[in-house]
Length: 324
Image 1 (spheres, rainbow, N blue to C red):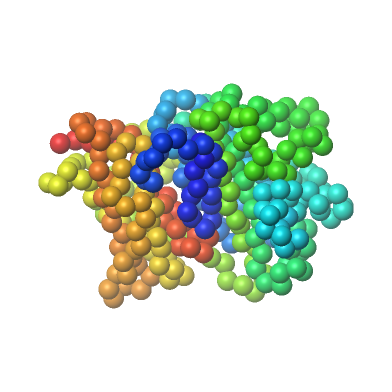
Image 2 (tube, rainbow, N blue to C red; image 1 turned 90 degrees about the vertical axis):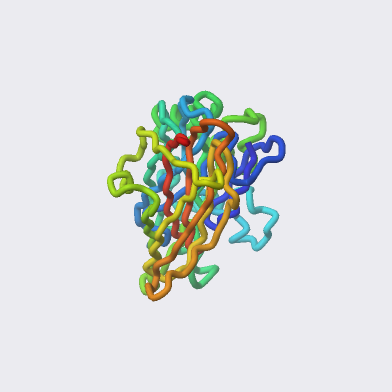
């Protein structure tokens, strides 16, 4: 599917079907790629959590991430935004080691929900980009997520890494053109997502992800620590036929967040709302979304993405069913 996430820190590519509400998820989709630290220093390792939704909850999926910073940052030409990566140029010039750029792959029977991957940002790329920019620079991370068997490239990369401890020139060429990867792939069960990771100088403050507290849940339902939530949350309808989801959001840097809502069943009245400043409580904000469930007894997945517009993000999600 082709879906563009209107979040500054991520975007997705795939094939769109008919018209639908922007909060509705009707195919495999990465609703957010959250970094453990949204701004980091060069040479650091970073954990990335892919929040993956799909109406086909029992279909296994596989995922691959890699670094591909647009060559436009070197050339100044926006037309090369999705063509060859800066990283590939730096490998050829000897500035970066090829081993620094080997993709990270997770294959197997992962249910939609959360997939956690880790990668390291090479020292060399940030020094080259900072020479050009002089201030803050960003490295771009791509994630290809597919229903199992839909993306032969993931298996190809996995096999080459296992057998050759590296990638062939042809495979590297494919990965350096992320926009071309979807050509010839199925129109369903495939999604490609991008986000930027900001790399800071040593004296620049590090941004953190916002925190949140779901105020509509009982205390024992609020904290979910496992990456795969197996229990089903029962949501009760209000008198107007909607389900209100309200959150207290805290942002340590005082960035007033936006909240994006998605669901595989029904739709939200608004896909995006901006948090309300909580009177007398600095850095605390109120967020409220309203889910309109499908007719009858609906069930599915629901996601709320909190985005501070500075690279920081957090996600609340659950499997749910509607009760009268």
